[in-house]
Length: 460
Picture 1 (spheres, rainbow, N blue to C red):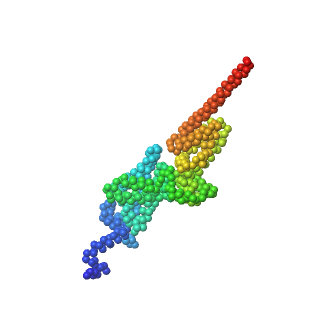
Picture 2: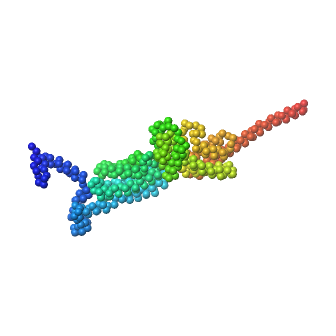
Picture 3: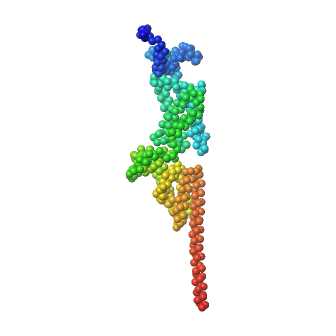
């Protein structure tokens, strides 16, 4: 028979052997209802006076008891101390700026920038987690434990994370820009910042409690987020399934093509070519993405829209020089083309990538935009020989490849290409001269035979 006799103050007596379980349940509920006042109850007047060197009267004078709030003077002092903490830590940002200054100047440093930043942040996090003289993570976790029951603490931490999001957003944007990476479709740099912060804070918990958790795991966590949420700027968008479903779609109308071109120019002018992707262009142009990839299978195929405008400027400059000698015009044209290509290296890389996608197409349609550039070069080479157009195409391909795939300057590329084209002109001129000389030499013996024949007849 269970003994449930009434206890004082309306409480019931626990059945024999059940008190421990009931206390566990009560303790779990109380932990879940804790506030900052509950966590700071350990701070008595005596402990505060010992830690501060002040008298107990000073404690009560600084924080008089409020009859409307069930909070002691020591609890008020502890709450004030917690809410006055500045969670901002400029060491990470200062360290990252130093990394930029030391590494971005060289291609090798820029290539390792993401790893270097991740290693730096991991070291600072590890120090904040395990160094007993550092307080950031301990106070953050204490606040997290009570935030759902303590509105003041919740607001403080929300403001802290809002500032952290903004700082890391700028950091992520700068690092990606310097390393040639962009967020995957539908993701912004701020989203990456939030996931980075959340993942690092989660790893920090494990780092605090697990002595075997190496600091390299912290940097690996960050690198994993970057790998999952970004891509190289020159990689094809993941639209293979959508591309298959669009195979039978009708072609884009003239109005839709104009809308796509306007969207591409808008993004490129405001954010740079690296920010152009099919999803964004579909959204801005109002053209369904499935329909868009029927005409532009990858983002690289959109590069022709920007490059066409670049060629417009080059062509206008070429027309303004039409009164000069051909060799002079050719040198200036090659110089303009190399300047334009080297000023738009990632765009040129996309042009070449798009050409590989069209490798099964032959003839002018295989590269409709650059037919204009090749024609401009061909028009300034000696005519009458099929090899001149081949030379123009080869020279232009070398120009694009040199701009996209090397660190050669525009002047260096221009000098090499002009030297090659000049040599071609000299070779063509020499070939034509030899041909004329051979023709003249072939005619000369015939005339002599005629004269000898005439002399023989006369003697006879």
